[in-house]
Length: 124
Image (cartoon, rainbow, N blue to C red):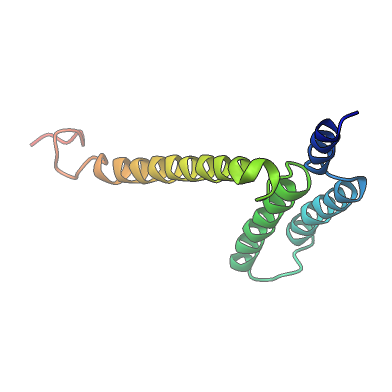
């Protein structure tokens, strides 16, 4: 095996996670799934307004765990291009979802029948 091919094999295996990274990611995923489940099922917090933001925060943390432990997206893999592509995709998805919600909200608000209008069924 030549030095260049050995270097290519070493750099390729470095981009994949170790068993410890997979184990840590699995344990963190289980814990980050169990916590919101317990928050909802046990009613440990009396204020439901706090539970929803906590679930979203734990969900975001779980996304970060999956990206780091299972997808191995960091600045070192492929010179950072995979991370850049992932961030671009994330931005496009967020813009699409936010734009869709904005359009649906405004369609709902602006397309409601007005009282006394031609669609309310009353006879003048």
